[in-house]
Amino acid sequence: MQRWTVLSLSVLWVASMAFLPVLGSWAGEKGSKAVTVTGEVIDTACFFAKGAKGSGHAKCAKMCIEGSVPAGLLADDGKIYILAGDMMENPEAFQKVKEYAARRVSVTGTVIERDGTKLLMVQSVQPAR
Ligand SMILES: [Cu+2]
Image (cartoon, rainbow, N blue to C red; front, side, top):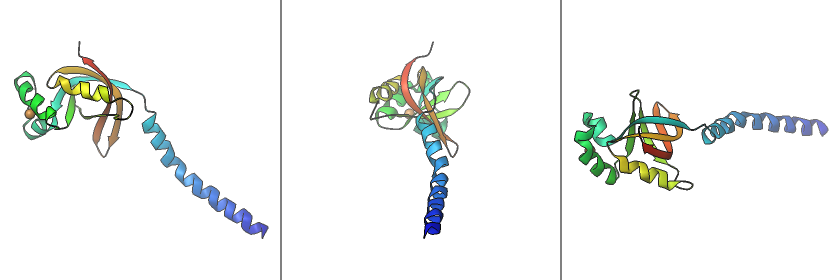
């Protein structure tokens, strides 16, 4: 009987170990360090469809983003981030970044990358110097 107890405990132990990497990566995303990325706030519809950006596109970008087209950040190094916000803890920062359509900003937040798409979870934003 005791043998079975030892065996089932080992099985439980091995099973719990299998979940550790999953928990670890989840914690890593949650606790990942904030970075600051500088670039232009783009409306993803017009940018992905026709590369539209810059001051000549400002009016359209504002309209698109206000109309719920996802806002993105075209970083100075050419990388594209989809902008998102933590609606539970800090909804203001994400609302604020949308006011900067087609303008250069510095966004501070955490980056989550999945299958090649980068998401920038906005914590704060300010006009780029
Ligand atoms: Cu547009």
